[in-house]
Image: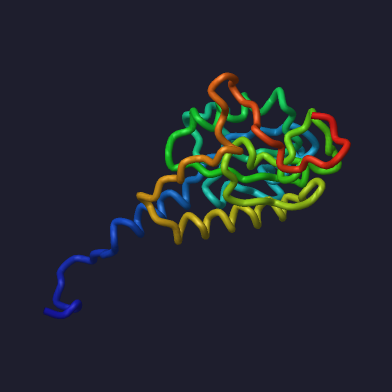
Length: 187
């Protein structure tokens, strides 16, 4: 039987491809704006850049309704447990985008009060460089994440967190050893 002999149109595909397409087309971000990078994140959602064309119309305020956390700005030691709690409340599959040099590496704030990279608290999938990164850079990072979702495995879970990202038993969040400790830096 040839395709011309069929009475109705139909579409075939693997279920994994359909699920990946649905996940990629409906990523709902949870905004976690902490500093000046949050202004650029808000600008990316405005009419000039229009994140709605990627299925990201509304920034969700509830972590239970979102699957992408955009960490925009510097993360202080006091904010790290809150960030981890929001991440833990998100449903699987979930992704994290680190926006800006302060979120990615601590930026020019190399002191005891600022976490030297948000990847010490939550696993990061995509980094958006810049100080602050432009809305175009954020959109490029989102498209990079979309490509990662499209080519990733559906049933693959994140590996168990390393010692640097997992909290100790005696406190809500305390890193064992900071990643960017230099001589003379107070602990």
